[in-house]
Image (tube, rainbow, N blue to C red):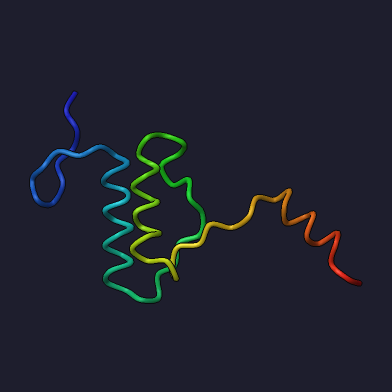
Length: 78
Protein backbone atom coordinates (compact mmCIF):
# COMPACT_ATOMS: atom_id res chain seq x y z
CA UNK A 1 0.00 0.00 0.00
CA UNK A 2 1.47 3.34 -0.98
CA UNK A 3 1.53 6.44 1.15
CA UNK A 4 -0.76 9.37 0.28
CA UNK A 5 0.65 12.15 -1.83
CA UNK A 6 1.37 15.58 -0.41
CA UNK A 7 0.48 18.86 -2.13
CA UNK A 8 3.83 18.79 -3.91
CA UNK A 9 3.15 15.30 -5.27
CA UNK A 10 5.61 13.40 -3.11
CA UNK A 11 4.55 10.43 -1.05
CA UNK A 12 4.49 10.87 2.71
CA UNK A 13 3.34 9.05 5.79
CA UNK A 14 0.37 10.12 7.89
CA UNK A 15 2.78 11.48 10.53
CA UNK A 16 4.67 13.53 7.94
CA UNK A 17 1.42 14.94 6.55
CA UNK A 18 0.16 15.79 10.05
CA UNK A 19 3.35 17.64 10.96
CA UNK A 20 3.37 19.40 7.58
CA UNK A 21 -0.15 20.66 8.31
CA UNK A 22 0.89 21.83 11.77
CA UNK A 23 3.94 23.57 10.30
CA UNK A 24 1.83 25.37 7.70
CA UNK A 25 -0.62 26.49 10.39
CA UNK A 26 2.25 27.88 12.49
CA UNK A 27 3.77 29.63 9.47
CA UNK A 28 0.51 31.17 8.29
CA UNK A 29 -1.07 32.31 11.55
CA UNK A 30 0.88 33.76 14.47
CA UNK A 31 -2.06 32.99 16.79
CA UNK A 32 -1.55 29.24 16.43
CA UNK A 33 0.00 27.52 19.46
CA UNK A 34 0.70 23.84 20.02
CA UNK A 35 0.63 22.18 23.41
CA UNK A 36 2.10 18.70 23.77
CA UNK A 37 4.66 16.63 21.98
CA UNK A 38 2.96 13.37 21.18
CA UNK A 39 1.05 14.34 18.04
CA UNK A 40 2.59 11.36 16.26
CA UNK A 41 3.06 9.15 19.32
CA UNK A 42 6.35 7.69 20.42
CA UNK A 43 7.35 6.70 16.92
CA UNK A 44 10.56 7.69 15.14
CA UNK A 45 8.49 10.48 13.59
CA UNK A 46 8.48 12.33 16.92
CA UNK A 47 11.64 14.08 15.68
CA UNK A 48 9.40 15.94 13.24
CA UNK A 49 7.51 17.49 16.16
CA UNK A 50 10.82 18.32 17.88
CA UNK A 51 11.82 20.16 14.71
CA UNK A 52 8.62 22.23 15.00
CA UNK A 53 9.59 23.20 18.52
CA UNK A 54 13.07 24.18 17.34
CA UNK A 55 11.58 26.32 14.56
CA UNK A 56 8.80 27.88 16.69
CA UNK A 57 10.14 27.80 20.28
CA UNK A 58 7.73 30.38 21.70
CA UNK A 59 4.66 28.71 20.16
CA UNK A 60 5.22 24.99 20.78
CA UNK A 61 4.95 24.12 24.46
CA UNK A 62 5.66 20.80 26.10
CA UNK A 63 3.74 20.92 29.39
CA UNK A 64 5.09 19.08 32.39
CA UNK A 65 3.74 15.65 33.10
CA UNK A 66 0.95 15.55 35.66
CA UNK A 67 3.04 14.00 38.42
CA UNK A 68 5.52 16.86 38.34
CA UNK A 69 2.70 19.43 38.38
CA UNK A 70 1.15 17.79 41.44
CA UNK A 71 4.51 17.90 43.21
CA UNK A 72 4.93 21.60 42.45
CA UNK A 73 1.42 22.37 43.68
CA UNK A 74 2.01 20.35 46.85
CA UNK A 75 5.20 22.28 47.61
CA UNK A 76 3.80 25.72 46.80
CA UNK A 77 3.40 28.01 49.81
CA UNK A 78 -0.19 28.31 51.02
